[in-house]
Length: 112
Image 1 (tube, one colour):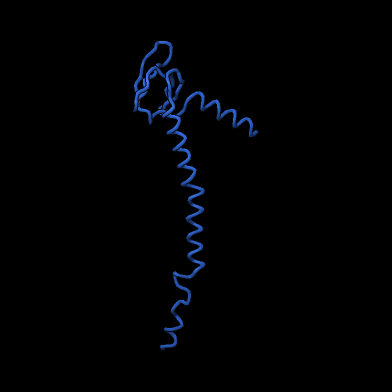
Image 2 (cartoon, rainbow, N blue to C red; image 1 turned 60 degrees about the vertical axis):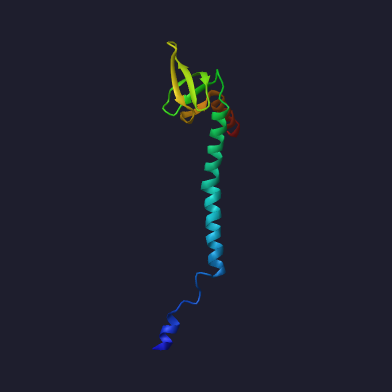
């Protein structure tokens, strides 16, 4: 009976070198496929929002478009359409600028 119990215990535990290598490899793959691209995207969006200036054409997260007339530390005021309605929004609500969209379109055309 004691022989059976000794044989039932696993010989390779959690400290097996191959197991540790596999765990480290999984975290490395997750970092390079998920976390790093997301951080790059966030950094690029933050740089775009910090470089906003008067006269830039923008699109908000809600889909409103217009031309910037005033920029403060954390808000942007922009005009929409011919009636020149002014809307004030937070910088984090700016999705893209016309310059950024043109650069992305040119980059996409070069890939084709």
